[in-house]
Length: 327
Ligand code: UDP
Image (tube, rainbow, N blue to C red; front, side, top):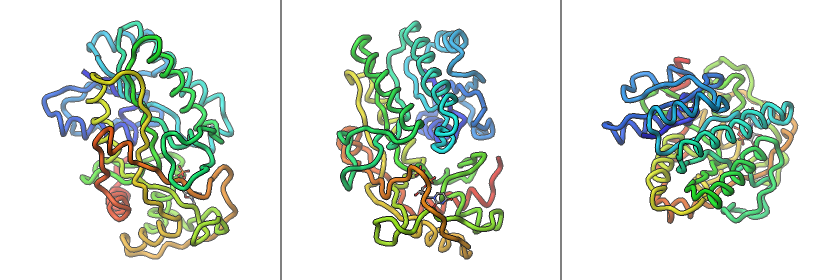
């Protein structure tokens, strides 16, 4: 049986939904402290056993691992606001890093040595090449990215000394929602561009701020590689299935290799919603590189993964969710 940490969060719950859809006879244990997660995100899933717990609660996690005879962990639980990580680094070191170490210690005690880890393109820092591959230097420019890099290194130590097999999936910009419209992105505060643009279209946000129109990009706004959450979920399952025959650690980018500018996002959000999105231009946001685009060829060759959703489908599913948001 697998344990999914952070399984009530935005990406974690999408994975649980996808997993139970693909493996209808298998059960999943979800561990979430519900600080950022939403129990409603697991609505309608019958094969899920929910444990409200913190990854840092060593004894509790150990009991959960042994009680359910867990043989692999998919580890999503993490704080994920870049801005907040700069203001409150201790919170990120404590939860993301110390919490993960505690989880790994519990796994070690229970002889669970297989794990898929949610890493991030934030581990790369400022790109030195157009398409970022997995060999790109890792020099994170914010605490959030640093916590993800530290965990990658810690896992490498477990692979070297304890024969763990793990895959760290480095996401680019996760976006979109489940096509059912039942689950989607719900952060408080919301800081991500697609939900904010759609909230502006809906009228629940007055004006969208575009951070910077003087970047060295064709239209002057930042370029990012947006990847649909369901495509992310599919990659996790492929990575999980590889672990039994995999030795050591793998590091894999998850992106589409297509870069969309902030202005393009606004255009697509206007087309999909059929509403005008009022926006202003504000100064650049600190720590934002001009462009972040994945070289996603390793995900294709190693995992056999190919994203199924383009930007339009990302925005359509996000709009469907935003208009009938339940939580
Ligand atoms: N962005 C923006 N206005 C906003 C929020 C984001 O212009 O209100 C820009 C941001 O500067 C970045 C892009 O949108 O270039 C994606 O930002 P987001 O916060 O969605 O994801 P991140 O790239 O930080 O993970």
